[in-house]
Amino acid sequence: MIASEIQQALGTSIAADIIGDVSFASCYAVSDLLSASIGAVGSAASALLSSLGLAPSPPAVRVDRRLALLWSSRSVHPIGWELPPVWDIVAGDYRARDGWIKLHTNLPHHRRAALKVLGVGPDRANVASAVARWDAEALETAIVLEGGVAAMMRSRAQWTSHPQGIAIASEPLVSWRAEASASIDSWHGTQARPLAGLRVLDLTRVIAGPVATRTLAGLGATVLRIDPPLWEEPNIVPDVTLGKCCANLRLDTSEGLHALKDLLASAHVLVHGYRPGALDGLGLGASVRRQLNPSLVEVALDAYGWTGPWSQRRGFDSLVQMSSGIAEAGMTWRGRAEPTPLPVQALDHATGYLMAAAALVGLDRAIQGQEIASARLSLARTGDLLTRHPAVAQGNLGLQPDDADFFPAIEHTVWGDARRLRSPLDIGGTRLAWTTPAVELGTSIARWPMEGGPS
Image 1: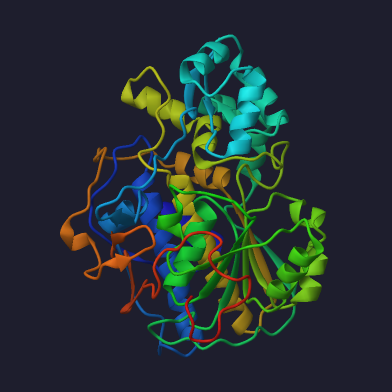
Image 2: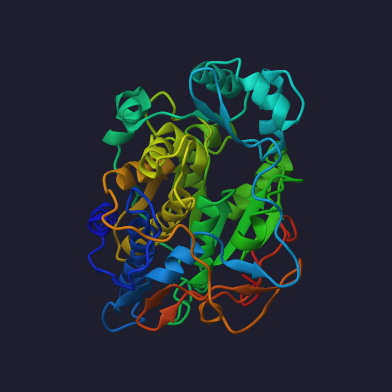
């Protein structure tokens, strides 16, 4: 079972009770993955509650399967306004000379790279004509070398024999490393808000990492997200910045780097999405981080894994699905003639919850006097777990929320009023809850809020 494999990877022993039987239609057990990953957060939080003395014994964990699936699509539902489109005008699947390729062009520099290689402007018809003159793998390689992101559609057989697929199969779902023997600073958790007073430095973007830190904020943590100036993710931000403060820093300046070091020195948890060696390039290698903060619990994310020839390759959920055979398997299963991904970006969401669970496990180990631990996860390894578990029953291609699925209170955001889905997780009465609404990026100062201020 997926849940037992996740428990083993995290080292947790408290099984979550999954309530409900609704499922997405998929050739893989995507609904089991999503509900089990949220259950893993609950299992880790339950153990932490007990270790902190906030509960006499580890509380029971329950996951509402329907809500778990709804959260994997989007948690925020605007009232009288609309979220921007998920994809830009160029992004999508294109038929190359010998197969399919996905261009991911939501970020301006990725779009420029793809269009430069293709030699066309941002017009879908012209892009399609240009792509059709390339072999898929050659175009993938050219775009990556130009600093863009793309993925040709491979079958599972092609991926499992590919050097990166082989590397992924040998990696653990959660890679743990003991970092140091140090006592962790205390925080002021309560049973309702077990992470109250805990400081989480968020150096992640897009979906998986922000889902992890949003989850920690839901348990009471003070989360400070740092982005470069002018960074934008308009279609995602209202969903993932819930309960956070968001600031900008230029890490290519001495002032920005010094400010980040100050934040690192006083954080309890660092969650980042930098590829192997990237922090070293900023002068923030592992030894520097450990010197700044010996008790720092770290959780890191990479797209294509931490070993193998693609460990440095940029990637997103939709690209990993294309590379690893998931989109091709969906196409075959549905009897379609074009790539067919999972019903939702399940690799992102599941990995995000597993990252949050890993942070909780690391904190639990630390307060019990064990060595400070760091954890590494990847979208591709989560995908590898999923592909080992075919779906056993049909389900829904789409799932829409009912009124009862939302928190009763209206969330007042800078974009307008919105409704937010209720917590899918119950840990003996402790639920995910957020005291501040979603915010725009770069709207806070790059320092920790005052105790009792907004999280």
